Length: 279
Image (cartoon, rainbow, N blue to C red; front, top):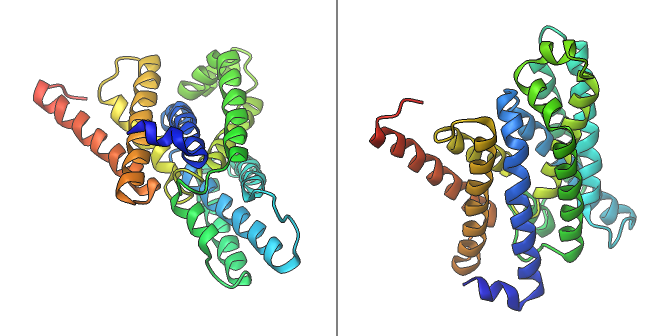
């Protein structure tokens, strides 16, 4: 079945991009879930939608940005949204969770305005919303590849700092970790991964790939590193299985990947029940 993906360039692009996304999203998703920031992916995905809609609007109305992938506009908006979230967390020090719904609402509002100015939905926008195998270009692959290398190197270099911050921010500050800087770096990485994932999973579903594999791995793992490894394995199974299924059965890849992730989570929950493990 996989051999069919190697015969056509657009399928190869989708397959290899999907493998990178299946690695990236759960990797950062573990840190996101542990920090209890699961909704941040939803907020930034809606900001990304606004960026994509803005790119399509600029191209349609003014003839600018023709030939430039909307993914770059999406990344710019997503990173900007991440910076605003971090700024608002400082403004609402005792109610930091307020920053996420504020940015989420702003993203939805901007997205709707840009879509209406562009005279409604079109095929390109639907592909970004729900993912598309045929829409992934070699440029998208290399963009995701660069993001993957950047995130992986950052995590490897500063794993200890991100780990401490995820579990005990006060201890991290006492230990000399610059919490503000690492929070900023982390949220920018999340923003880039969300924007990079939208071609495969879709803007409205990308948050699921950051949380569902992690939720499944937490049912089986016995430590933080094991949680990361299992989350990546489950993410890859969902992405590869979802891409193959969507191609052969003519389904939306984003929805297929998410449903497979849900099934994996259900299996892990049932497996724990069968073994009598309470977790």
